[in-house]
Length: 199
Image (cartoon, helix red, strand yellow):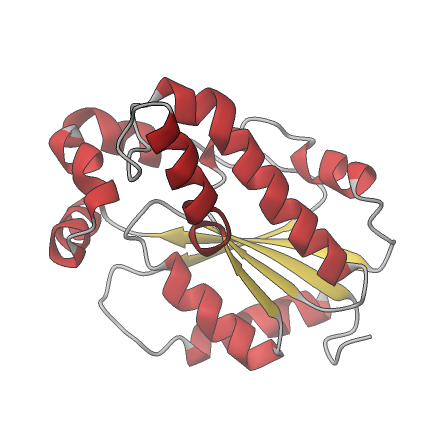
């Protein structure tokens, strides 16, 4: 068992450019957890599959083949790796949007059942909240090819990305505002640990 008590499984969620990766990495360092970035785990095979079907390997948003066929496989791969760690008592930090699954109130319950999570696993959802203008600025500044569609279709992308609410039950929900361009998340990480330790 880790020093926090129960084995926490963190879902660090938020739109692209929200800063969820920065927070997730800081949390992983602090609790010595398994940091699982969906892009790092899945981008290589996703790119190969997209290219094999005639698409740009960086294409994601607006691509029906990616959305319907590849994205579910990505998340299943991510959850498989995370569950293997969590069942060993290792805290897990998922760094991924998960937006397509927000409307499923039983999402955490179904994951726990499918992957045979033991009782001591504690699901924690960290919502990284950020202003749309700030996200737009960050996407431009980081200059990633996979963000091109988002920027080109901003007027339709942002209302959809910011307008969905995570309805997951059987999890502790914590919101962190990241409108400022800070690099030090120490206070936020400590607050999260205090919250789940006392919950």
